[in-house]
Length: 397
Image: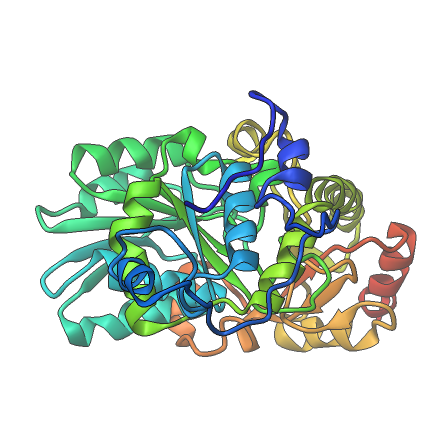
């Protein structure tokens, strides 16, 4: 039996973020150990046979079980309030795990049309295997309800969405899923469990790109699926054993340590993002600002309820001058990092229509509201006045 950390009953979220995982080894280390090993030794052949047959819980092979990865999984599950979690090689691998573990030919998915571009492409690619996806408005539960079919098995939402920061009503979608005999999966990348816990609102599964805020410093690529322990064990562990989209122990260790500072980072970055969003709204060269923390955001009240009263750390805006205007703002920056990654302590800036959503058709981008003048800023931990000055250079031009 793999032991558990002996924590007092009812400890708080931040305590779990620092303490949950596995007990220390015999050496008594205070910082969690990093287990760089591909396999594990067994005392005898009979024990090895039991462990390979899943008759005895133990670590066997790092493709589907490693102490460092398990520590990260337990910690993230504790933060999300789910019984189980399985780490994956990337956020997209987590969504692939979701599809392979839950769906088969003839099944139907309802998905927000505002999700990350690669997520849209992945669901579309599975049409050739007989899994059909209907894409609907992120914010209109009536469209989700109308898209339901007898063979609908999964509802997939990302909230807030990338890059428009549209917010869906998780509780309403959970009710639609339950009534239709389907599962609701929520991509919680933008908020992380520091701000939003979809399981508490009725979601069955939570997907993460650990590359973003869970790591927090742009160091590694990682992903995870969180959900009920039985569902993780029966649907996803067998896929991991066969397909091997494994999270490396080193990357798991980096994410594990990132989780310790997740809450304080999200609070600080979200506060800076709110200040920047208010400033952007006052700029004459900005046509529109997308940020859930602003009263002008269409789902502001819902976001404040779902996201612990925070708008998160991502701000998008539309610069005047369409693509040329957006490129002018981006190219004039001297502090912001021009990269499509987000969740870093360094502020990043990107043009979604040509990067994160560049593989979509223009019609798909227009349907999702991603215009050529849009710029996305993932606010880091720099002085916000310096980020404003950085953007002002391009906006003034």
